[in-house]
Length: 336
Image (cartoon, rainbow, N blue to C red; front, side, top):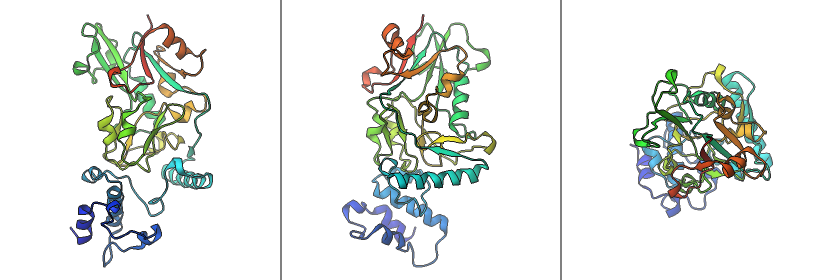
């Protein structure tokens, strides 16, 4: 390990002024040579990732190579929420150009904000779900998840009817060709889009937050891969990219949203976003649209005439791990 790398790992960070960089501008910092001689570009990129992680105060990310790829142009890019209109337009133009060249097709990246007077909610009828897993693969197709290794935002659990809801003995690897099996029921899980999300509180760099319409989102360019949010989530709904996601060009969905299904990179966390690229345009999430038995419901909780409000007011409704006070917007109910 070089003297520079040793200092980087032992330094308490810029907050303690131990790196002697106080008063230097961002441009000056970027011009500081990392060594006295020539340096391999890949090593330089890795060193800058480490620097960002150290500044963020999150050494855990270093142990797994967790920081997302940092380039010279986006090293000091502000958080998505802090970008002005011109800055946002420039960032989006760059991403659309990058993705279009990578996948060989015209890719759009939307920044459509939350609509006023809309609070999204989701409901799932356990008495109808047959465990076919069509929702799982519709989600993968819509949201550009990695194909190899596979990343699934939705997980369907098979449970014994006599035992009731029992996560300890649930089977997530049942044969979907033989469902529904007698004596069993199925409970799909995904991000619960909590009103009081523990994942947001745990993020040391503010890379995840709750939008005005209730969707909990992630800024992949700010995620440092520390996985604190994964540890904090009681639903196992967040997924880490240990390798570069595999997304064949012919399978890539080109209609994306900056905070949703745009292509991710190695070393970042991702999860369900209620198909933000669809729902903010007035469409259903892909999993709702594909369900063959109508077990999945989605709508505006602020609309007293919506189907989801009717379900909450007239059905037997419950949420997972209610005792944790995360206040999920993902409801389960019995339609019978």
